[in-house]
Image (cartoon, rainbow, N blue to C red; front, side, top):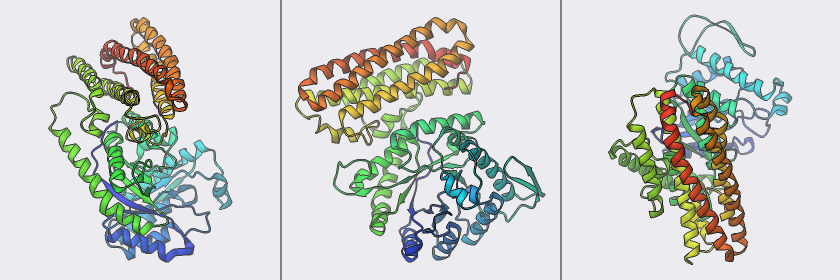
Length: 503
C-alpha cells in the first residue's frame, strides 16, 4: 500500500453520554479551541444512555466556530435516508459548511429491531445502505423531482434540497468484504475503528477498497482513509498508542505513509481534556511534520518505479534491508523495460512488486532480530521493544507471535496468487500452465517451512538455547522465499502487464 497524499486531519471521538451532557459539550468546545479538525459522535438510537446524535451535533454546531461535525457513524436502518439527507444538508447550512456524513449499515441487529427497525440479513443491510447512498446524494443535487425505486427505499417525485453549501463527504464504517467493496465503489471516505480493525489489518482492507474502486472506474486516491483510535499516554515501549506522544506520532505517521490513513479521531478516555490537548499540541504537529518531510523526500527521488511502502514509511533502513531494496529495484527495472502496456496491467505489476518488496523487508527485519539475540545484544524478551517498531509487528508481544503474524501474511499472499492471480493468468494464456504449476508447488514448500520457523521461534521464547534451531529455520525460509520471489517476478511480471491481469 502507499500514501494517498490527503491532507492530515485530527479529531475527537466523544461518547454522547446523556448523564454528563455538560462534559460532552465542554469536550467538543475544547476540541474546537485546540484547533482539531473534527468532532465525532457515535450513533446508537436504541441506547437510552446516549444523547440523540443529530440533536447533539446541532447543539455543538451552535457552541463551536470552526470544527467539522461528524456522526461516526449514522445508523441508517433507524434513520430514513431521505430525512437523513435533509438533516445533514440543513446542519451544513446552519454550521457554515462543516458537516461530513458517516454512515453504517447497522451492526446490532436485535437492537435495531427493538426500536422498530427492519430485521434484515447482513447482506440485505449492505444492499439497503447502497440504496440509501443513492437516495441521499440524489436529494443533495439541484434538479427536477427525483424518482427512485429500490428494493428497500424509494422516492416518488421527491424534490431535491436544501442543497448543502459544500460537498458533504459520505464516509462508511466498513470491515467485511461487501462493505469494503461498497466503500470502494461509492464512498468518499472509510472510517473503521481501531478496536475492530487492527493496524496490521488495514493494508488488506485497503486492497479490497482499492480493487473495488478500480473496478468501478474510480481512482482509489479519491477515498479518504480515516481511523477512530484510542490509547494511553505513558512510558515508552508499552505497545501501539500506549506510550509518550513521540511514539504516538511515529506510529500514526507510519499508518499515514504506509497505509494511507489520513484522519485520526481520538476516542474518549477518563482524562479526555488532557488527552485532547496532548493529541492536538504534541501528536498532531509531529505527525504532520514527519509526513510532510517524508513526502518531500519521496518527491525529490528519481522516478524508478512504484514506491516502496516500508522503506518510504521508515526512512533509512538497516543494513539487512539493502538486499531487499536492490532486489526490488531490479524487478522494477524489468518492468520499466517493457513495451507500453495497459493501465490495468501496469497496476497489476506494481501491486505484485509492492507486496513482494514488503515481504523481503519484513524477512530482513526478522533476520536482524535473530542476529541481535545470537550476538548477545538482546534476549527474546528484550527484543520485544524492537519488534514493536516493525511494520508487521504492531501489537504482537513475542518472537513467536510475530512470526505467526508474518507467516500468516505470506500464506495469505500465496493463497491469493493460487486462487485468483494464477487462475486469471492460466485462463488468459494456457502456455503459462507449467510455470504456474511449479510456482504453486513452491508455495506449498514455503508454507511447510513457515510452520517450522513458527515452531522454532515459539520454542526459543521458552528456551534461548534453541537459538541454533531458530537460525537454521529462518535461513532456510530466507533461501526459499527470496529465490521464489525472484523467480515469480522473472516469470510473471511480463505476462501480467501484457495480459492486463488485475491483482
